[in-house]
Image (cartoon, rainbow, N blue to C red):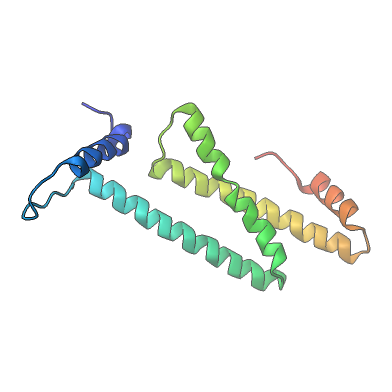
Length: 145
């Protein structure tokens, strides 16, 4: 019996076999149960993730009154793909729990990025050159996750 983590892989194999079969147009084949629940969860999570990125960008755009500063902060959010690579390297499956971990880790990274971008803006307002402001902001605000 396959483990629960293998459900996505097994359902893909079943779909591949079903797609390769030739059957009458009167026959309808659909997968249900845990597979449909899993797909529904991933679809809902994906839509929620896209909406969250858009809403965070719009809120940050209003807060910073800038298009570029929120983009820099949201770029940090998109770098969460490293988590997915780490999951692949360790053989861990991508599931709802691991995606929740990605969201929480990204929230910490985004809040830290907001502090750094805001501090760079403050240093620039005090007349510091961009490179010096970036170096000082990262020295003061950068911390490990």
